Image (cartoon, rainbow, N blue to C red; front, side):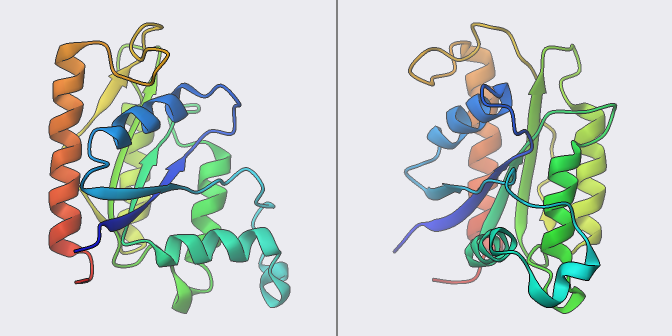
Length: 185
């Protein structure tokens, strides 16, 4: 039986994004059960309905990669108590036109990290609402991670046993959700 394919979207376009580091560490926890593909969003132009008749190649590539995935895993920072514009832009491209919404029916998990005490709690709530409106089944439970410089080592492993255990349980739950809701293979 082949693994389910999960599109990973990092809601940051920073070269040294702590959310990208977290995404890589978290996907490593269940890579024996799920196949992950990181799908970039920083090359997408700002959404403009005038471009719908002749969509840019970057948009077509992005939406085809999301459409081909069985599920979506979003790891995002929080900007001004919401999601970053680059992530909202990607979501908007994927939701249009309405009959070709790539988010509909996708199991999804969301998390994120920041140096602050509450991680990305408010941004994740906004993202949860947006994805639910677009027809994704967003995993219950919350994973708000306060990022410390030594949380992830040079090899990409989570160094704190308690945090690793929490994130392992979260990703195990996501793998279970995907196996229940994704199309049969």
